[in-house]
Image 1 (cartoon, one colour):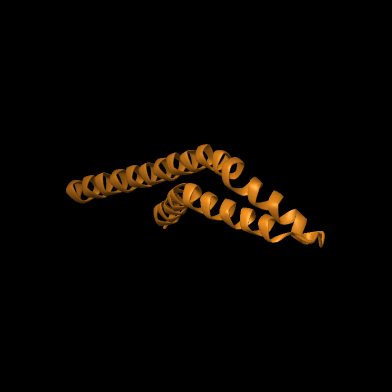
Image 2: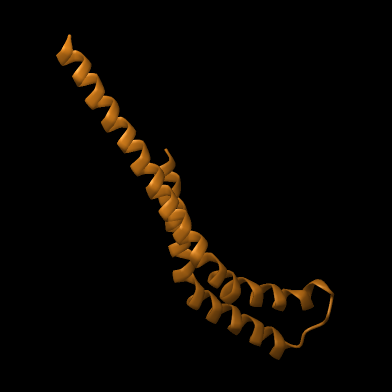
Length: 99
């Protein structure tokens, strides 16, 4: 009987430690995501919406302006894709750690 009780106590302790470890990992990943996301929004999201404002107001753009917007979009995509991929990976890791 003592062996069974001791075994259950050890099993319960290991389970509790696993839950705490998982919660700590989720918190660490969320803190990392929260630290990286503001820089991403500042560098990658605000300029994109600023360029779209002209299109939403119905302003007619010249071919040069359209070409400049497209060039800026390509440059921004190339610059921001690694950050976006990193944030997406962190989101996947957070979801996996929560399961």
